[in-house]
View 1: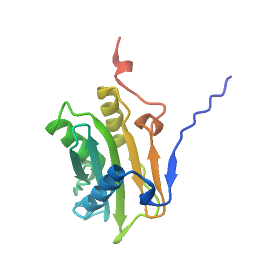
View 2: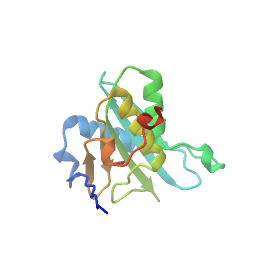
View 3: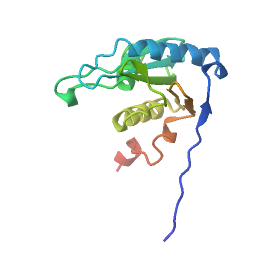
Length: 161
């Protein structure tokens, strides 16, 4: 038997002012998007904002449904819209935050498994890293790519015979 250890690197910031102006704008957009999330069942609003290489910022927020599987997370709303509206524009960075009971979350929340897979597909599609900014009131975490969130990932390479 051989044991393999997987490690990821996360940059943590205590204050949004430690980040670049572009990142600060993206974080503010993600926070703004939380306010229009449709989350009447969970009361857990999530906002996302994606910066594309053409300079556009695409907004997204979670959209719940009484039939829970029919809803969609903020990250996928933003990414699917970006890929639909600007199919050739490469996503560079996505910022994600959440709010519950009227307050932004204290600590960053990571994307769910489905969102990780969609983000990974986008990273693979453009053959380029997609930075991830996870925003909480107490700290901000930045990951250099989606593979950091999904190290043992499934991609199209497994489908080739």
